[in-house]
Image 1 (cartoon, one colour):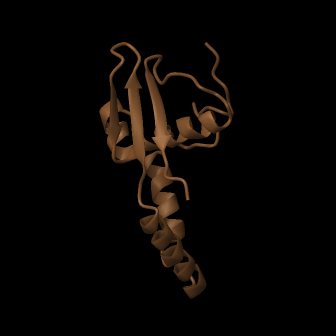
Image 2 (cartoon, one colour):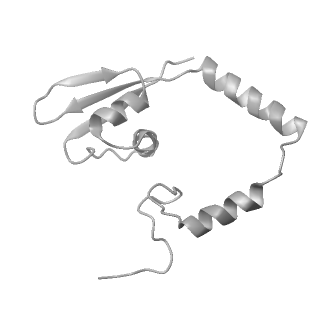
Length: 118
């Protein structure tokens, strides 16, 4: 079995599944203690959150290839719960589809993010 020293995460560019030791978590926490965001940064965060709320969510269509039935979920979170996966997996699948990669999730489900066109 290969045990790589680098690139040990299953999804490139994602820390999903990464496990931190209690010691590492404590070090990160200690390094952030007392730090405060600047007013400029806080303003940008508020602006970003406001934009997210305006474009709040999107629907996700999940088609079961075995049964031919589909369900439309009100959010990536709800679709992910139904599929027992992380909501970031839905966004990852959407990104791959935009790159022209269309592969059924778990070999069984076609996931289509339904975003409204502006």
